[in-house]
Image (cartoon, rainbow, N blue to C red; front, side, top):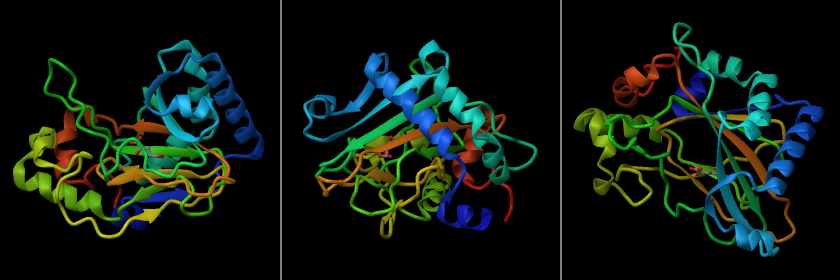
Amino acid sequence: MRTSFRQDGYLVVPNVLSTAQIAKARRALAEMERSETHTLQKGDVEALREGRGGYYIWHQSFIRQESRSLLDLYTETGIGKLADQLLRSDIPSTQPRVAQVVVTVPPWPGHGPQRVPHFDGPMLIPGTWEPTSFSLLAGVWLTQHELSSSGNLLVWPGTHLRFGEYLAERGADSIADTDAMHEGPYPKIELGDPVPVTVAAGSVYFAHYLLAHEAGKFIDPTGDRRETVYYRLNAERHESNWRQAVTEPLSEFASA
Ligand SMILES: O=C(O)CCC(=O)C(=O)O
């Protein structure tokens, strides 16, 4: 498990959620969707409402009352404990502050909001020089998603290591120089071939912060929508160690 995460930069753990946990989380999402309290981040929500298919994502901060259900999902399914098996034992994961919900509804012939592989941005906090990097992403798949070309997440295995080399050569702060990168943003490094993430409902996906990824097409109009909840996880002290974490991409992770 650790070996493939270290090499590929991602890992899928099947059968983490019970059927009851999946159903509870899907009900919570449906309720959030109906209440429209979510903050739409990007995507074509109008297309979805009008039944034309589409893709959208929104952010929920755990500080907000209405997103309590997403924190419950995180806690009840033991995602933090699984993440801790990937991280070094002296720097376990801390509770996430942000969850991101992704929903794709067929047909979705184009790509997601970002049309090229990307990382989740340096997203510098205004007035500071600290990027809002994180250690690893945990994604909970609430729907069955075992076919490709059905709005899959696409990943480029091994790119977390090559992105790390790129940053080690230029210095960690060059992560903010997105002008030197492709639009994604993602640096102009060798990517290799993308792999569609195909998983069963109830699986949890873990990915390194630096791994190149993108939302793929959804070409089958009869397919089912995808519902994924992502959590951005930090190893303890990531905020002060982020420069080392991005230039030595495995420095926060346990050896194989
Ligand atoms: O469709 C997905 O799951 C990927 C979402 C994504 O790339 C992102 O939020 O940065």
